[in-house]
Structure formats: C-alpha cells, structure tokens
Image (cartoon, rainbow, N blue to C red; front, side):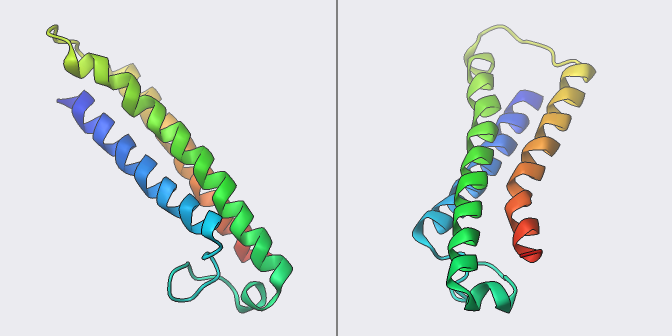
Length: 115
C-alpha cells in the first residue's frame, strides 16, 4: 500500500512539474491569464520575461524527470506477486528525495521573484 501511495505522489508531482514546464516552453509564465503571478517588472521587461519562461521550462522539466523516476521504479514492486515490505529507512530516503525534487521545482519561481 505504501509503495502505491509513493508512486502516486511522485507521479502527481511529475505531472504538475511537466505542466509548469509546458507553460514555460509556450512562453506563458508571465501571461496573467495562463501563467503565474510574477512581479510587474518581470512582466514589462521582454528580456526578463524570456528569462522567466526559460527558467520555469528548464527547472520544472528537470523536476518532472526526477519525480517520474521513482514512480517508474516502483512499478515492478507493484506488479510483483511478492509482497515487499517497505522499511522506515526507505520511506525516510524517499521523503528526502521528494523534498529535493520539490525544491528544484520551486527554484525558478523564487528566482523570478528576485529578478
């Protein structure tokens, strides 16, 4: 059961990060209707806007790939007829990995605030 929840959470994180990366690739990060809240100075400056789109596209695509890896790695455990017990150490390591992936996904948005 724990492996199913972990795979689902990482898959959800991968989808969310991929959607943010798509927004960046399309150039919609600074668009008020389709994008995210960004400072007005970033929205007005074309170079800053282009940089913001690039940051979100790159870093969120990286986060999506990193989040997808554990979700795909857990699939053999789910498909196996053997019941594999998940240790507390594995859960702690997975939680730490999830925090790192979340920080990577959040990085471009924090950087845009300081532009």
